[in-house]
Amino acid sequence: MHALPQPLYDDLKSALTESGRRDLVSRLEAHRPRKALTSGQAAKLLGVSSANTVKNWLEAGQFPGAFKTAGGHWRFPLDEVEAVKARMDALREKNSRGDLSPPEAKDDEYPAPPLL
Image (cartoon, rainbow, N blue to C red; front, side, top):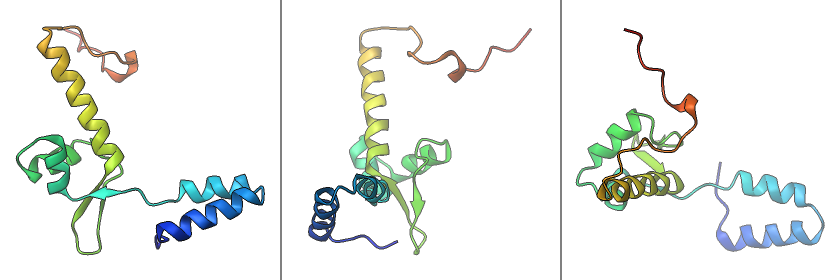
């Protein structure tokens, strides 16, 4: 898929909106490439010293939208990196308060404890 230059994308979106084709605007927006970061850029944004840490988190499932370029380099969607950063910041803040309660989540997000 080839990305449209931003001015052309904006013109196309505007023309579709003016012609009443909200359905096509929605499809266009759904297929718009997301901004992606290198592992080094993601590491810097997350405040970790090594790109390998980000790759380890990738293997643990933290970045489901990550992809490899044709050259074999990983790219990390900016919105996913920002979401991980927000979770890290919330956990740091919670820890600084000494709050030991489990994170708020649906019960099915945590496995049942093993039976003894």
